[in-house]
Length: 78
Image (cartoon, rainbow, N blue to C red; front, side):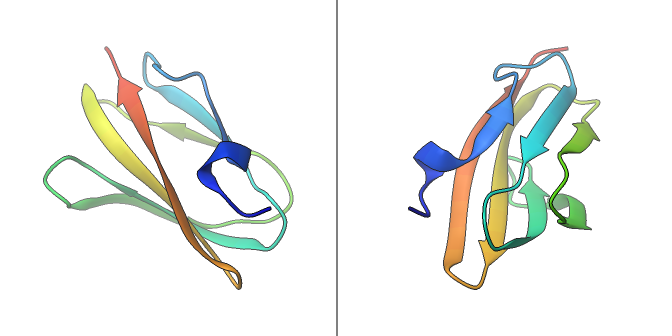
């Protein structure tokens, strides 16, 4: 099942370092800030990705795959 509930991003909230565990078929991670600006982008493989965000706020983690796009909000408190 390809849904935000299956997307494992931790810890949330975070002090700045976040781990994203890809799910089946995931190809790309894009992170947007609250203004909708793209602040991070990478291609996904079958290994977890560690992301460090320096500014506090709410971010939208968007995962693209052949099955569609799923998104999850992550709070950074630093």
